[in-house]
Amino acid sequence: GEDVEQSLFLSVREGDSSVINCTYTDSSSTYLYWYKQEPGAGLQLLTYIFSNMDMKQDQRLTVLLNKKDKHLSLRIADTQTGDSAIYFCAKWAHSGGSNYKLTFGKGTLLTVNP
Amino acid sequence: NAGVTQTPKFRILKIGQSMTLQCTQDMNHNYMYWYRQDPGMGLKLIYYSVGAGITDKGEVPNGYNVSRSTTEDFPLRLELAAPSQTSVYFCASRDPGPGETQYFGPGTRLLVL
Image (cartoon, rainbow over all chains, first blue to last red):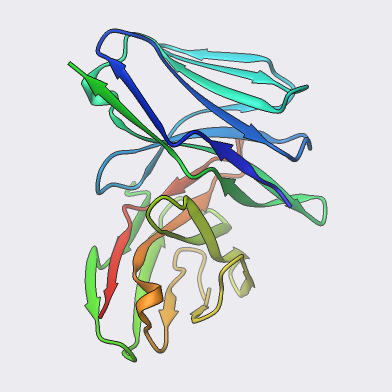
């Protein structure tokens, strides 16, 4: 079955870059996602990338995908205290040839120190 | 539009009680999902639906039931609440367009004592 792994904690100083990493096992072509969850809130989609891409940039966010190593990363430039949250990596799992559920990592708690 | 809405926001149940968690979306999405989130464990899929009248089990369906009589609504039923069902429950719907993005509701926090 699909497995998505993330490191659990990351602490950075305000203004530095943050890099959150994710690895997965299933190499099927699909979308991969980064979600952000602030305390007491639901999951907010940050960005996504299709598995035939290497990189996607969206303002302060850069997603890198290494298909060979099955490694996905999210870089946040100029990290702010408002970026403190849990970040989830997610990928579709397939059944019967179609996407049927998102498999989530356990989440990375990003702490931004002033 | 409101997106995905869930009620209630928070509920305390006694063991053995039952309740229904409500979920509604106004985006006309066919696919809808129920997840539970336990601390440090990510999200686990409970049930999902590919359209009105069609539901299927996810990874952790035991102790739950769902129905999908309309495109908009996807309620989750707990028949005999157990402490192991203490969790945060998220409903989501899926946009079939580019990205196939799932949109999440704000969650329902459930405490079973």
